[in-house]
Length: 253
Ligand SMILES: [Zn+2]
Image (cartoon, rainbow, N blue to C red; front, side, top):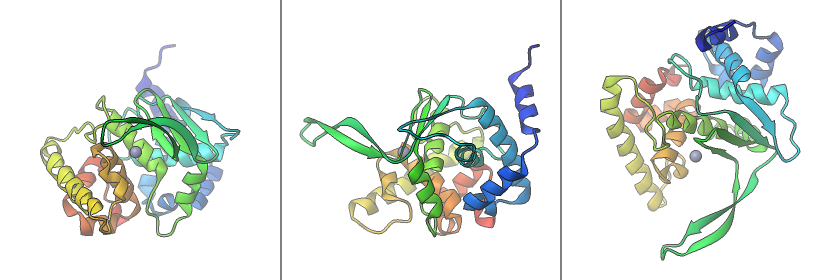
């Protein structure tokens, strides 16, 4: 019998979330422990939908366990709380490598010469349906105290950005007021980060965010969840725009 996508998702969200899964996330994911109780229940529903809709593949000899899927989906689901969502519609497959993997690519010198280089990557996100993660880097991020980066949040933030059709640091903004506020808040903070990075000054956001507006949005999303109090203090307009976008205020958790 035909069942609409929304009905199917509603049923998935209502599926019992096993106690063993709660325990696993409690032990493995610091953000899960910080989350308010009501948000945690909503998170469980989103995790169920993601588990049922996204395909997971191990690469480089890694076997994708239930725990790996849960930890990845918990981070992805965090980005969806309180918002109307189509669950990363461009994303079909999550590929997980055991550790950082090498990618042959090309780079251009300042004189325009193309060079073949091999880059080591911890993750990638594509608009064509694939997201790649290195499990060792995911675990390293989770163990870091204080937490300063998250490759999982980063790559899924790119998927939100991709919802507009291109990854350019401008995700779909449903709120009219936010559409007005967003470009200025994001570009001013991006400029500050770019300038400080050029001058080799210490920065609140990871210097990688100065690469382009798309990376800036992904790096800012990491900071928003991992060190919200510091971000609110150091980049108030950016924090406020992200609060409006994510419909969450992690500084109060
Ligand atoms: Zn990125």
